[in-house]
Image (cartoon, rainbow over all chains, first blue to last red; front, top):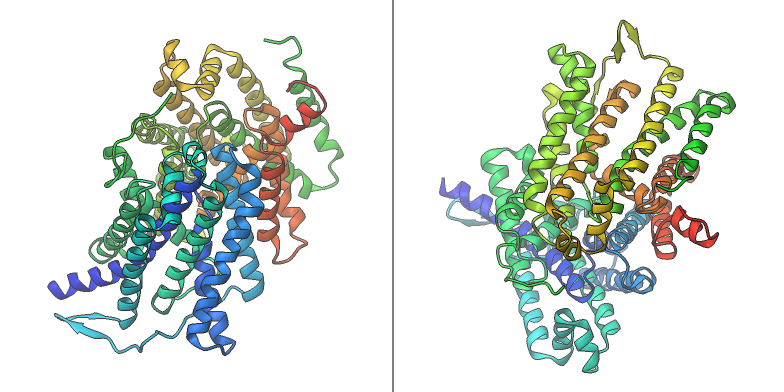
Length: 291
Length: 310
C-alpha cells in the first residue's frame, strides 16, 4: 500500500517539477506583459529535442545541455522582438492567437528538421534505481527535483535581492509607475521572455530521460503548465511552483488509483473545480480592479 | 437598422445561388459545403468573441458533443437523427450554461481557461469510451432522413446548408441591432458602464455563450451527417484554435468577416497541401503575420481602408 503510494508520489513530483518550471515561465511573461504565452510548451519541447540532437551529434553532455538552454532562450528573445513587441497593447485575443501561431511555427520547424520520431536522452547519472520503503526512485528524478529546487532559490534571490529582479517585480505591479522611476520596461519584457524560454527548456531537458520527447510533446506539457500557473493564482511565483507539484501529484495519483486512460484529463478537471470554487487559485491573494 | 443593412446578405445569397453552377467538380462542391458549415459555427463564435469580448478555446468540444450525439444515439439506441441532433444541442446548452455561470462572475479571461479544460476533457472522453464512440478511429454516422427522404447527395446537402447559412447571416444581423446585441456591445466597451445603465452583465454573457455553443453543437450534428463519419479530431484543441482563428482573421465583431475568415481558413489547408511537411509552419506563420499587421482582422481593416462601413 505504502510502497504503491510512494511510487505514485515520486513519479508525480518528478513530472510536477517540470510543470512547475513551465508555470514559472507563464508567470514571468504574464507579470511582465499580461500575455499568456501559449508557446511556452514549445520551449519545453525545444529543450528536450535540442539536447537529444546535440548529444547524438557527439557533443559532451554538459555542452549539449548548455546549448539546449541557450538556443531556446535566444528563440524566446526573437519571439518577443518580432511578434510581441510590435503589437504592444493589443487585445488579449490577438495576443493569444499570436502566441499560438508562434507555437505552430516552432513545432512545425522541429518536425521538418528532426522528424516525427520519439527520442530519449541517457540519464545524467545512471539508471540504477534507488529503493525507498519498497518504492523505486530513479536517480534522474533526483536531478529533476534538485535542479528545480536550485532554480526556485536562484529566482527568489534574483527577485528579492538584485536590482534587475526588483525592477522586473516593480514592472509587474505597475508598469507606468515603474517607467516613471526610470525602469526600462522593454528590457523587462525582453528578460522575461529569455528567462521563461530557458526555464521551459531546462524542464524539458531534465525530464526527457524519464518521459521521452518528440516534436509534439509541447502542447500537453504547456497546457498543464498553464493549469499549474492558474492553480497557483496566475502571476504568483511561489504559487506556480506549488501548483506545478500539485498538478503532477494529482495526475499521478489519479492515473494510479482511478484510471490511467483519463490521466491527461485530471489537470483540466482540477482547473474547472478551482475556477468554480476558488477563482483566485489556491495561493492567489485578493485583488481589486480599478475602473 | 440601416437601410442597406441587408445589402451584404443579398450578395451572399447571390453567390450561394450561382456557386453550384460554376464549380467545376464535386471536390469544389464539397469544399464549398465545408466552408459554409464553418461559416455558420464562426458566426456564432464571433457573437461571443467579437461582441461580448470573451474567448472560448473549447468550441470544438461542443461541436464534438453534437457530432457524437448524432452518431451514437441513432446507432446504439435507434433514435431518429433529428431527435438526436436536438438532444445534442440541449446537452451542450445545459453544459455550457452550467460552466459559464460561475465563470462569468470572474473578471478577465478565465473563460478561455475553463473552455480549454472542458474541450480537452470532452476530447479525451470521446477517445477513451471506445465501446460507444469507436475510440480514436471514430465511427460511422447513419444518414439524415426526413419524411422518407434521405439526404445523401452532395447537391441536396449544398442547398440545405446554403439555406442554413443565409438564415444564420440574417439572424446575426438582426441580433446585433436588437436590444440584446446593443447590450452585448455595451458590455464589450465597458462592463462597469453597462452595469450602471442596467445591463445584467452575467446574464447576457451566459446567454451569448450558450447560444454560440448550441450553434456549434447543431453544426457538429450537421457535419457528422454530411461526412457520414466522426472522429475525435473534430473535437480536439487544434480545431478549437482553428475556429477562433477564423473569427479573428476575418474580423472580430464583423458578420461578413466571419464568412471571409471561414472561407479562407477552410481553403488554407488545401492550398498548403502542396508544401509537404511545411503546412504547420505555414499555418502558424500566416496566423502571426495577420495578427501582427491586421490585429482587427481582414474585413474591418479593408473596410476602414476603403472608407466603407461594414
